[in-house]
Image (cartoon, rainbow, N blue to C red; front, top):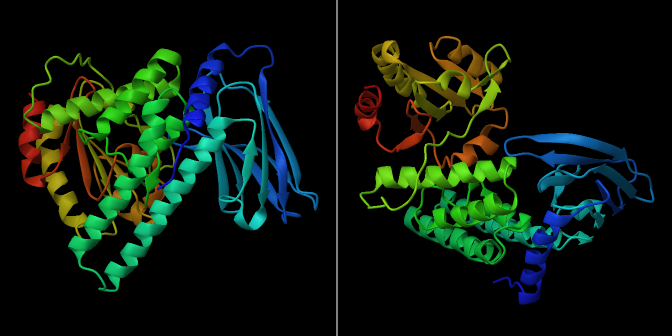
Length: 386
């Protein structure tokens, strides 16, 4: 099991607090050396909540040196250095200079970083996540080769995931206002989050980071995002479990908005169709054997309840664009596609663990239920459409 020293945790807390009072210079610097990368292009990218955007690039020489200077973000934000299909994640929460040293062959795993304790913590979290992914990948191969039964596979996968969460929680609960805590919370396996937004225990981790970001970074996009996630978690858990949480102050909240390209390659947002309507959000894949039957069921519900205000926002994770276009062109509801397919960050934020995944949003804009049984869907739609 990996270990975090107490001194590092204190430094993480201090770094987060220093970010609040940073002044003077308004830019941050990312510099370093990459050995063995002569002629290759290194990219600086901004990692947003649901997208990654290239900010700058540089073709490396034999010396391997690079320098990027960018305006410091108003609130803590996340970035990465990308070389081919490898990347180094880091965050910027103040005016600082981060210095990296890496080798082209092991760019993502064996690098060193100076100038930011949070960047060092993010490296440790990344390695823990990679260890977990490798362990689960090995277990998957054993199951596919009939070397272990499904029950053993599921139990061991859960154990690996729990080990990662135990490691991540040390960052989350000790310095919940830090970018390292935020990063640890949103790590994924197979494109899905380790921390289940709708699990009663995991929701506490979201609440811890959300509360801290609300306090230290009010008005920030990530603070608002976390705030909504935490409140959605409470509401959905309350809806799905018969527990008394009346003492919790839950205000009306917005769903996690989605904006993806439709058939005309124009971005269509969930928020653009959801005002004062009941919306069924469906993550799906048309190339699966069950897709046709599901769409027939949705079709009958749409025909019956659309006159009363039901809308369907269907997100395809199909990798085949032409197949998706062929099927979706025949459907009467909103059809969009995430080009990231199974690596969809949006699906991860909705904590989609398997397809199809269905969520209901009420007329006030609250995500009120995750549909576990298709048999209950019509009753749920009828209740919300009153």
